[in-house]
Image 1 (cartoon, rainbow, N blue to C red):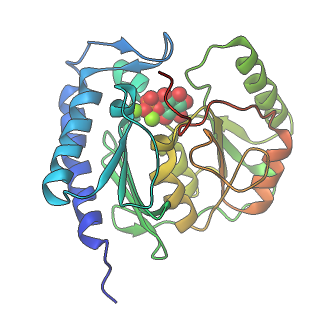
Image 2 (cartoon, rainbow, N blue to C red):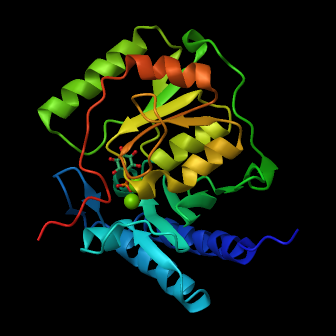
Length: 280
Ligand SMILES: O=P(O)(O)O[C@H]1[C@H](O)[C@@H](O)[C@H](O)[C@@H](O)[C@@H]1O
Ligand SMILES: [Mg+2]
Ligand SMILES: [Mg+2]
């Protein structure tokens, strides 16, 4: 049966590739680092230009579609997911990596309809890996099918996580205690690529059993969440309930056994939701 969202997905792949070229081109030149929510929440002109490139090109082709873009939200746009077709964009996932030329940087584009992610595209542009997933039709990297790891023993797992961009001491204490719990299970290792989207693609590829983080935003994980689930993985909230992409918390794992084991070790905390009303 024809896929009603195929042309949108083709466009997402094409524009992510174009955006990736822009990111690669700017890697050595863009040293204009600005900050957002904290001194370590970085943004560059390239983040802003890439988001504009994506939004403009989508608007020309699909004028009725809506957008949630990281840099547009930072500039004051609202972050509400409606039932309308919505492009959820992180122009550079891994801006800190980009600034330091640490070689994991992704363009992440999720597309949701009726609040459900229909397709996800993550372009790991320095590795030239194009990760894609279409709901119900599998996940792929450069056209090759992805499958999560079959490991069910947490002691033989690699777990990915990040420290995030908050330096609030209470939040950092929670993060460290969770990390300590997980390290001391013990697990084989803890890793972090510096980008939520690539961490999730590592789970989808079977290279890591799980990824968890508190503090991410919907644009960090919208595309990656579908890539993980279409590769056979599971998504949970850090308290073990259903994942809520606006809640800023996620566990993405190869299977429920690993996901639930990790949940037991996480000291959860709550942050302001992405869709909280804007403060005037
Ligand atoms: O590079 P970003 O798009 O800002 O996303 C980052 C986020 O800033 C950082 O706090 C998280 O730890 C990372 O997982 C995100 O990918
Ligand atoms: Mg991001
Ligand atoms: Mg970003």
